[in-house]
Image 1: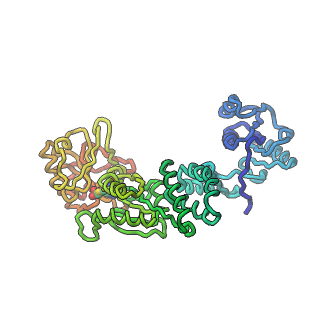
Image 2 (image 1 turned 30 degrees about the vertical axis):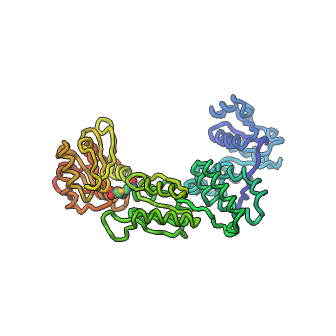
Image 3 (image 1 turned 180 degrees about the horizontal axis):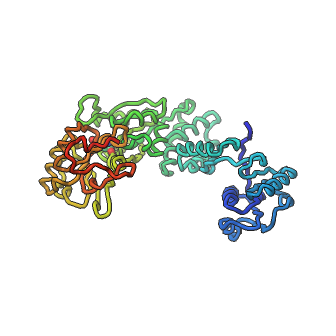
Length: 483
Ligand code: SAH
């Protein structure tokens, strides 16, 4: 280890920055956040520093550097861009045993600034001993992506309750208790911004800890369910919260729509249970009631259950029914939104769903006909909008026929987007009059969406290039755009 990472308490400590440019301004902001009493030595100041000096947040000495500037200081930073001044600062600091950092010059420095993630009071620092700052920043970004934004809130939540837990529980039980707070319901609630819910979970956890011996095992006695939207398929389209909860869940109940690449993002030790079905396939279908029963049972066993659903749980996902069932049984749950298939398909196929002058509204509608046919077809056939049909591949003929009977033109552009955002995504463009025939010729199968509206004509390829294909093209082969 070339450098020892430490966290310095700088509140009210005198710190000197030599240099008044943009980089000095960045360092100044960091040091002010840490509560330092800052003196900036520089003949001229960058406007940001000037503002802070004018606001009285730092002292500005409009002078050239002399070693005496470092008398009585705790830290020194040189950010002048002038080698001889930087050397002078470095030497003066060393003579006074003051730690010094010369920006971008590890050889003149006795300490270096790490790349940081600030979720105060939790702070993560990443360093590369000055050898690869860009790599350190990349590492920081990777860590940042998996750390919840409200990590600081969780640390404060725990800090505020430390004393009462210390009074209530013995030393052995305490650690297990805090483990359960961090990994369990209370932690998940704080991270989701629900402090009252977190407090209730905390109290329940405390109650259980006092009563039972499970405290010693580290297992939470309290389970809950996360109804998580998995997005349209590409695992990178999971939300950060989905990812964080998938990393915590003990059991994952997933639909068939959820591809293996998404399941790989679950905690390695998590049990995975497939409860979904491809629409219309009888095999492997778990009735909805059984899914409810399973969620309730697993949560009552004290497990954290991720109910992972394609797209968004509240869009044609029966998430509402599942939430209701959980509420009925008194099981706490959280809903995590996902990118619904229509949005994935729009981005993947380059079809904006609304656009000035072409589509003022977008409707997401079930194409699961005829069972769900309480639709207002005249409204769906109106111009100036985009209509996206879910679950409609098996009924393309009747959807098109109903739209046309309700007044839509045969020539209205339409597209089929199959397996949107996945590597096998296919996009087929045509007209309402021919889309069913083209779809069956091309063998388009579920999961796929039908998008109808003028906007399909002017759509772009996902990479922004205008599509060569014309809507009037005659053969399916001309129209298929594997991306
Ligand atoms: N809750 C999901 C929808 C579930 S209904 C969501 O919000 O996306 C199942 C239907 O969604 C499928 O029949 C299909 O029409 C659509 N769908 C889901 N994923 C899809 C994908 N990757 N590409 C195209 N359509 C998809």
